[in-house]
Structure formats: C-alpha cells, structure tokens
Image (cartoon, rainbow, N blue to C red; front, side, top):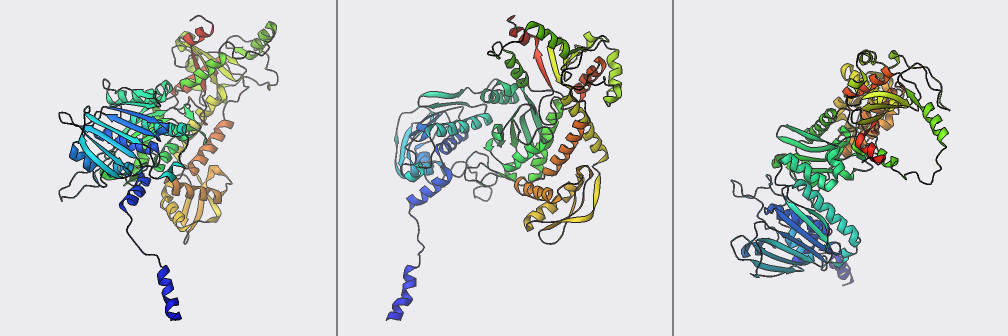
Length: 629
C-alpha cells in the first residue's frame, strides 16, 4: 500500500492542462493591444479613419486613465454591426478572396485584427453610440467583457466611443502606468503622428477640458502642399523653412516626404517620423537607412529631422509582426533601404550650399539688446582698436596688425587654395556690385582672420573660412575616391576574427559591399572571418574591433555603417588638415574664390560634422537690431 501511495503522489502533483475562461482570454488579448491609454487612443482613432471620418475629436481625463472619448463623422454602424464589433475576431476590414477565405495579405486598412473594441471592453467600461447616415442610432455598453445592448439611441451621424476607468478589471496594470501628464503626452504623440499621415482629416485633442491639439483638414491644397502644411503645423515653422522635398519611385515602391538640412538636427532621433502605407512605425531598417544617408554630414551624436512616407503594395510588407503594428517587415528590405538612402542623398545634393535658417536665428538672438547685460562694456577707444585689429579690409596694401595671440602668417597664394586659382581669375574680372547678386555675395573683409564678411543686396554673410574650405576639400576627396576607387592594402598576415556563426554568415553575405569599401573578407570555418585586405587610408587600424562593430551593425540594422563612417572620418581628418586654417589672412581674390566655390559645391553649407559653415543675416533683421523696424 505504501508503494502504491508513493507511486501515485507524483501523478497527483502533475499540472493539468485546462481551458482558460473567456474573460481571462480577453484580458490576456487586451494586454497585447492595450498597453496604456495611448494604445487605446491609437486603435480607436485608426478605426475612425478606416470608417472614412473627415473629423476626429478626442477628449481624455487623467491622462486617459478615467476617460477616453472619441467622436468621428465616419460611416457609423448599425445595431447588428455594433453587436459584432465587440466580439473577438470580428471585423469589416478583411476582404474575401476568390477562394472564399479572408485575405490576410492585401491589407488595405490601418487595422484588421478585430481586437481593439473587445480588448478594451475586457479591461474597461466601454460605451458606443453610432448612427449611419439616414438610419437610426443605437447604443451599446461593455463592462469587464459583459455586453448590454444594443438599444435605440439618438445620435449625430458617425460614432462616439467612451472608454471609462481603463484597466479597472485588471488593477495590476494601473500600477505600471506613468503620471497623468506623461500619459497625456503619450496620447498627444500618438495623435500627432496619425495627423501627420492624414492631412485630409481634421483632428482635435483636449485634456481635462483644455485643447492641446487642433487642426483643420487640409482640403484646399495639393497632396504635397497639404502634407507640408500639416507637418509644419505640428513640427513648427522651422520645419517648413529647413527641409527639402524627397520623392522617388521604383519597382512599385514610392518614398516621399521631407528631410531636414544637416544643420537642422537634433540630439536624438525623436524628430524622425516614418510611415508605411499611412501607418506610423518605428522600424530599425528605416532608421538605419536614414543614418546611413546622413553619415557623411552629421556627427554620430546628431540626428536629422525628417518625415518619410513609404507606399508599397500591401502584399510586399507584413504589418502584423508587432501586436501594436509599430514595426513592419518588408519582403525585399534591401530595396527599401537602398531607395531611402538614394532619395535622401538626392535631396541633400539638390540642397546645394543651403544652411538652416535656425542658424541665423540663433545668431540674431545673441545680438539682441540686453543679451549681455551685466557685463562691463569696454571703453570706446578699446572698441575702435579691437575693430582695427580684427577686421582686415579687402582693398589697399596696408594690412592690419595681427590679432594678439595669433601666429603671424603671410597672405595665401592662389596655389594654397587648391582648385581656387581658376575661379580667382574670374573673380578679378567681376565687379563687387555684380558679386553682390551672388548667393554668398561679395567679400568685404576678414574678421579675426577666421571669418569672411560678405555683403549681399539683402544683408550680410559670415563665413567660417576653415569649416567652409574643409567641406570643399572633403567633397573633392569623395569625388576622387568615387572615380578611382578606394585603394586597399594587403595584410602580410591575414587577421582571423572569431564571431558567432550567425554573425559571421551575415557579414560574409555582405562581402561584396565591404570589398567596394576596401575591406576584403572570407568565411574561415564555423563562426570565423578572415580579413585579407583593408582600406589603405585607414592605416594601422584595429581590425578585430572594426569587424566586430560591422557584425553588430549588420545584425541590428541590416547594413554595415562603421566602415564607411571610419573612411569618412579619415577623409574628413585629411580634409581638415589640408584646408585653410583659422588665423590665415586671405586676399579679396581668395575670399571671393572661396565663396564662389561654396556656391557650386554640394553640402558646402555645413562642415563634415554638420555644423554650419556660414550664417546669413538679412537686412530687415539687422535693421530690427537697431530699432529701424
């Protein structure tokens, strides 16, 4: 008997498989879809857009914890539709194909899983009032998964959904929510992103009765103008003034939008807005492509401002790889990455020597009266002496004395400005008045032997001579490398780098791409890469570290940026050492030659690290400084 009892004990403790209750299943499903109030707002607003709404108003209380109300003027729902809308796996957004089954490939709507309403109803008190145009209205309630209704109700055409006491049925989730202010900010971010992708729809958001977002539908402008107008209303006037249009279409993929000038940048990537078929996404592939496109124009810790919209056949993209659809998966990621890089590079090339207007704004603010209050102004005679020492006139043989502490140097000869000798000859034949018609104007002098002062008909331009020439030399080097290719140096003893099997295989798949950049690698056993040649311009470099960085980037971003960035860094360093230094006195011919070269050289508006090479101050702005306007 004892043996029988002991042998039965393990079976008694064995866990048994059982079905979960419907309420538990719904709450688990809700946890995937409704993470926080902003998640519920996203699902409800996207449903309103799919319903054809032209106006959507959202009101929240306590950051959305106690109330989320969404009103729209869409197509509305009948009583039967209302009953089905709160059932799991019921939707109007999936078409039936020729085989009589739902088409899960050609997704034409923002949502299709049919999970939002039943999921919200499983964890909150959900109320819906809806009325199709020309028909009667009906109301329905769901509390903790229990449905009551529908029943007749008066309502305007469209739908109103109220979500009260979010997560009351799952109180543990409330502990993980942030403050009311933080949750309200998350709701605002969701609304702004959706509004960016839908300029033909009007949006409004109020929190505790205060309007934080309101914008009318952009109905009178063309699609591009409506898009830019909507983006500018959300991101500010600076966005409109400092972006370039982006557009490319190949192999059924269209990429459009607006990308900021390199000098219009941020310290993080939060100002990068990416959309796929109208759906806001945060996708590593897209973010990596943006980084690659700007790699030659921004330091690693700076990020461009942009909004890009990818339009692609729904069959070529999987939007259901993430419960909240924040990520997507492309059938041909290489094509998408290449098109994004290509379109951004085309936009950057078209920008020429433009620098962002925010640079001038920052400069003007430092000139405002009272900006240096509290500092003792120098005596008048000292100001005159400083001006005489630091401003070198372009005419006359007498040169001012050197700035104290600055090395005395002789004026540059034309050959010191490599490539400027021919433009300089043309400058001598052009009058100063004619040069003032040029974008960067006519050189009038040199400030502190570092900054060129140029005059235009509309104001003045201050140019950092070293930063400007550094970019010009760098662009020449890039052109030479493109024409002749990157020279390689063979290693006397090939370097063996040990990686994981997957990392090594992924890196080997990109061996052709790396070879074009001067790095020749081969697979060398399981999880090992052998390096035979490296770019000559890198010199004695840390091969182990470089290859491991490349492997990490390929695994994380799908592309290898470290090598190109290192080459760009070396090229930039060489350009820096080969360019006109601060403290060098330039003649009028040399200064004007530098300005003319900048006007015809792409990207000359910023140095190799994304800093501006010149600042433009308009005459009206200068007059405002002196109270003339």
